[in-house]
Length: 194
Image 1 (cartoon, rainbow, N blue to C red):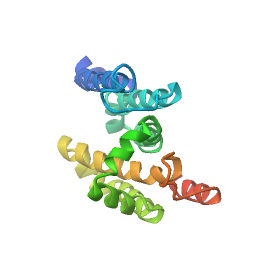
Image 2: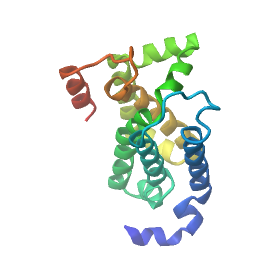
Image 3: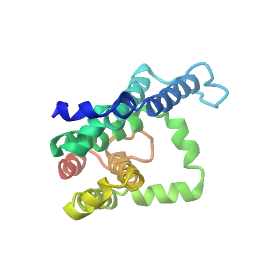
Image 4: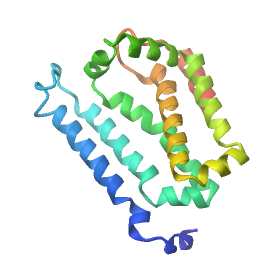
């Protein structure tokens, strides 16, 4: 399996431009949640745990889409499914838990964003949306077409990633007034995604 990667150069294997973009996002995040916090109107300090979640999400995103795992995902279905599990089941949770609540509160002041979010994060809607898109993507004919076009593949995986974010929101968000599931309902929703 790894021998098939020998035909690729270091740029294809390690995506340095994607790495630089993610490093810039991580540095911006650390600046906004650290020394520049008051400039951006963050009253409450951001915990180390929250920062760790966000940075873990950045690292896992790079592993999924910038490391050799991304190329392996085009060559073997096993690597592809490992990539999908990390990208859709772990990374969205890290970002939801890592982004400060005050950013969400500001975002939800925009009525259109709040209404869209309320609709798309309803457990049944988000579950059907994510599972429908994920299943459609893995229909062999659709999968083959998407995997052969770089821009189509990037678009489809981005849309599924956003749907995964909506799906995980009711389960892991800590924002007051946005907790739509509790206790056994969370377990039921989680087992439906697994």
